[in-house]
Image 1 (spheres, one colour):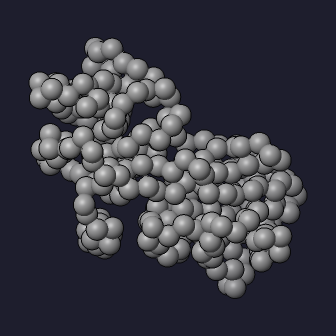
Image 2 (cartoon, helix red, strand yellow; image 1 turned 120 degrees about the vertical axis):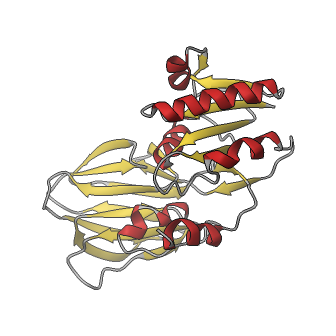
Length: 270
């Protein structure tokens, strides 16, 4: 089995752990490779994430490292997160249990699909998000005017600091902090959470991903689109963003742990 190891590169301990894990797995007979950013400080040869050929990707880091890695891969490859960050909600294993689990990983391991959202403007794809896309004013303390259009019908219009368009996976991230609900990741839907809306009637919406969803900016103030906290795109003042379910879901190696058990462990006991 070929394993691609990716580490957060701003932490020496994480890099050292990744190097040690790679060496031990190689001794066990795994074909181990590193991405270039991880390989460089380890003094090893590395490959580009975009076109890397591997059976699984082991990511040592926090949620940011996992999101960035998935963003950079051209095709979905099953990933396994080893938490080396804060909460690490996307990481299913802690460092002290990772090696034992990987050593017993069967060739026909099962995976869990996680929905991603695709965002486009005037027919041009802007990117895909596993957690969320955030539309936010470029000027602090200024609001933007937004209309939510569902199947061609204006469902809501409001002014706010911005809007989060989240996946169910992202419902435990920024969307939760902004007052949104926790959503089962098996639900195929778009979670819309206004950020500090001016009207109390502007509430979160959970919309089926089978519907046609558009987000219209109706403001004289410019806004940015931020995708998974990794990519920022300037939208200007009047734009219509189409939101669809991506045909390339993220793939996570199934470690046989219940989602709601993870919620209880990582969030409610902080």
